[in-house]
Image (cartoon, rainbow, N blue to C red; front, side):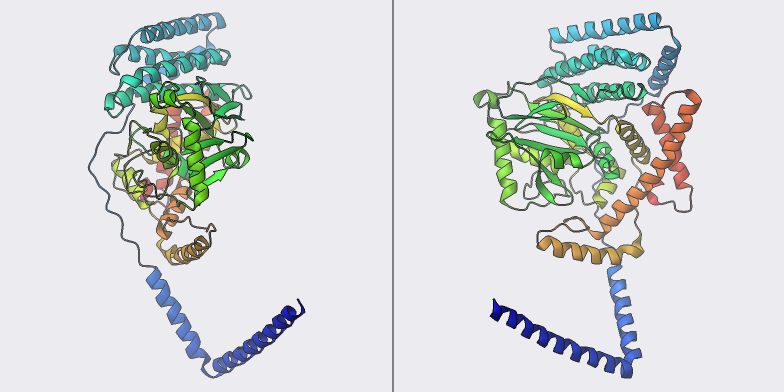
Length: 531
């Protein structure tokens, strides 16, 4: 130890001697040639700045359309439902109760018909069910005490529809539109009821169907989750809204994760992939530390042939993916290429894990047909527009919805974020690009270089691995515009509530968000994303 200390002292003496000599040389040089050196350094920095200012070449976005985005296009229906709600708010209790009873009877009778036979997605019986469901929701929003009955009705309908859809081709437009209209529409109806309900009356957990499973289990937010279950969730960032809504079928979810439960200890590992660090593991506390507006638990149906042959298959899938993530770094796949599992975006964690065991998820692939959406997402690194979006996993007939948890305090934020994004994407075929501050590009490129050095040593940098400096600036610019429109929307929605006595329903919220968008666009700081 003494020899080591002496060596350190000797090295320090030598280093001090060298540093002192260099300092004297620099001072002497500056005193005689200072202006020239300073000028040279300044010129060099200017040249470096100009080089770093050269923009990236934009990716050429394919314009061919595979499918057409889903459009409700039912403004008259939404307006009529709002009238039903307003009328129900002032109706006497007995009259409203009888009307709600009648609506339940119609919906339940329709479900009974559906349960007795197989129907194609074009069948009229589904339209009758959808009309009854929406009409009921408008009335129950004025009488939230009946909300548990509506939730039970929706859960039964969802289970029956998932069973019917086993016979459908989920890549066919009629199938996708039918299951989306009822499942997404039904959830939206529940959200509307919850948001009109008195504070503190919103149930965080909505049960689905408790699909049997033999794999190890644990508890999460009141839900029983099993090893091999899939969690789809919604984050609170503007980019989370873009992921959830940026789809031919705008949804509620922006992230996917796979559950592993240790058979001996019962410890839970959430296997996921983050933009910041790629594939990673988290315990329940860490998983919940990131903002979650809602979480849905999905489970493979026990009747699938693969699970009949081996009921522990989901646990084996989770075990294999857990070992893979522990085995080495897997960066995030910004291109969203689910065929290449060398890099993983969040959906790939689940699809690749089950694919290795012979089960193909996302029976109906996700499509991004809007040209504006393609341009925006391409600017952030996406290269594949037929892919696997988190929201679309819910509609896979092989999966059962076990339960859905909503954060009651943040449910309104979910609605606001959706409305802002829908308004920003309103003219979906516009060729407007995501703008960014070009003059900041050199600085951000230096930050990106620093991030790469950190990545080499296994650390996470300020700019995610795989994201370019330009993309980082575009994310920042998008987020600033998003938050500015959202702030205005909150004010407009508050005025709406003060004038009418209730929160604006979603269709009204989108209209207010559109007004806020154009108000933002009229400012001197207007940018291309709102043109």
